[in-house]
Image (tube, rainbow, N blue to C red; front, top):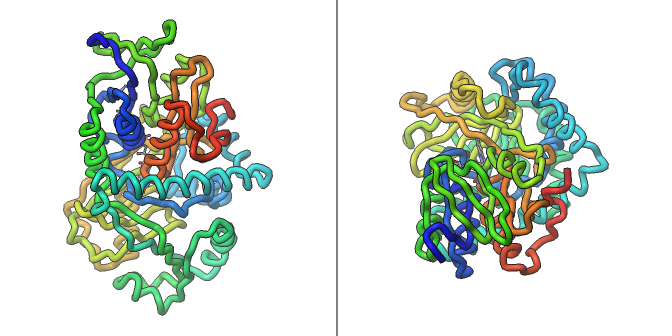
Length: 415
Ligand SMILES: Cc1cc2nc3c(=O)[nH]c(=O)nc-3n(C[C@H](O)[C@H](O)[C@H](O)COP(=O)(O)OP(=O)(O)OC[C@H]3O[C@@H](n4cnc5c(N)ncnc54)[C@H](O)[C@@H]3O)c2cc1C
């Protein structure tokens, strides 16, 4: 192979691209990962660190659709849509609302549950192979409710999860301090999910997985991919910096920017970004026992090895608008109300771009116009959770093996 000739090029060094690279390198393929910033430096660097294997309900069914009107009234609430962005967003929103219809509900739920079963098995196995198990935290999660009404409204969702074998335990007000001391008295109920896991820091995990991929032979090339063109049985890849490469196969794992590249190969994929915000406080900010979930307020609090991370929210504002860090501050203020002993000084604010499809399922499959281009993007709120499973599935496809699960619900051509 000459200098410009490559076997497999992965575009994007977020957690999804890194996991795909690790699986392919382990299988003996020569992998080159191209990224314009670095290894897990963008959305995969600052997320809430959850391996949310039990989070099988698609967003449209998770109450977002019915809570949305109320949320939208609060300019710094859990959901916001800048009015100027609404016309561009309308087709995606329409598909999102349709995805919440009862007719599509069961299929999406079953697809998500099958991907989650694989996600858990693949992460545990990849962590063992890459010696990163020490980064796993198995303390479960605690979801909190401020009224009996809010708790009751959550019950159908828990019934759905129960059907898929997800264990949980509802808690009374009196049991809450045992699971998290120092909570405000305003919480009257909770649900503990023992199988929920977190990692000690998502960026450090991504970098450790990359080390493993590198040891297996993967290499990194800094650069921004401007163009991917099929040429004969190969692909030509042009970098914005002027260099041109050729590859036998390309994996597009460019997160919220993937649809720009997919369009060049003939697939129009309705990818949007759900921007999210957080603040990471110093580790000593609060003695947190496990991840706390405040669904009604659209944010979580996570204990990390590197700090205490408070954030979430959804801003459907596209890729170009500057961040509005007042959102991060609003969640921090609420967290102080919910955990009165929280020390709020010394925090670092962050915004990330969740890559989201309207049916809350990722795109994992072949391009329509080029059988040697594979897509691995659109994991929305669950990219960390589903990255290893996606790496496994991409490896199956590239090696021409039967995929570990039915991939039709994740087809790029489903829209
Ligand atoms: C606030 C928040 C909290 C979250 N919490 C969780 C959680 O607890 N658990 C969970 O599972 N998920 C969570 N997520 C979602 C998760 O972070 C994402 O789904 C995941 O990081 C997406 O990974 P990715 O590899 O697809 O994309 P990214 O991490 O965005 O990586 C894509 C990479 O592609 C590169 N790129 C793009 N275009 C090009 C190009 N043309 N050329 C070269 N490089 C390019 C970018 O530089 C980037 O590095 C959260 C997200 C947010 C915002």
